[in-house]
Length: 260
Picture 1: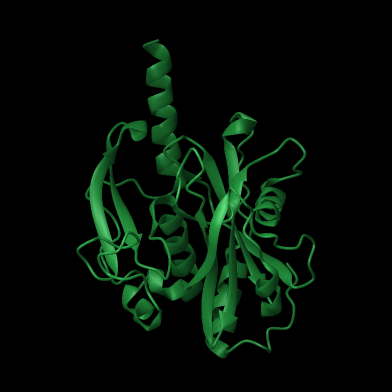
Picture 2: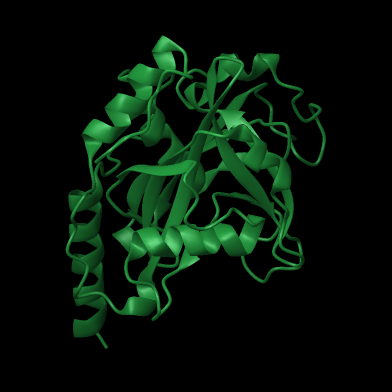
């Protein structure tokens, strides 16, 4: 995969970008899944003041699902999309007016799919923005996105990094949790035959970053910075990696079919 010159970036950011490129495009065969169960999100990273950051949105409270929650730009695959990378960019264009086919936006890698509670297989597409002036022209899609913001990528490994941000007030609608920066809840997932799961929530300058979005960004940060989280990431017995989680999902679906 060809990259533009990275001379404009600080040395640590250059290293992080190269690690993401080295991760590569994950060629996962999803042909057996119904097209309506496939989705993609765009993990758009850029450098600001020497810090690698990621673009995020707060979903409109008018939406039927996940209203008011933090999300990465993205959505379900359309029949017209040539692949899931195209899906991620198309959705980002529709949601925040990110330009399509820009010479300043470069695909770095994709991650293995994540499985949502609605059984969507969500493929993260990681991309690099090399001209931050594009951020000035982003606009939230009315009725779909209420706010556009960004967050330090490394803060998903060490939440204390976010202390330099103008974070949402403690005790407010956007952060009513007991812990100052990072909160977790352990639960079980019925779609995975009651496998354990740890929900992560990160305080931000806007809505909390949690659930599937936080899982995607934790993994992206682990790849980019080649280090683990400063906190315990997994619940006891939690499945790890797409293969294990997908196998459990198929097993659960097979059981449901046999009992129907």
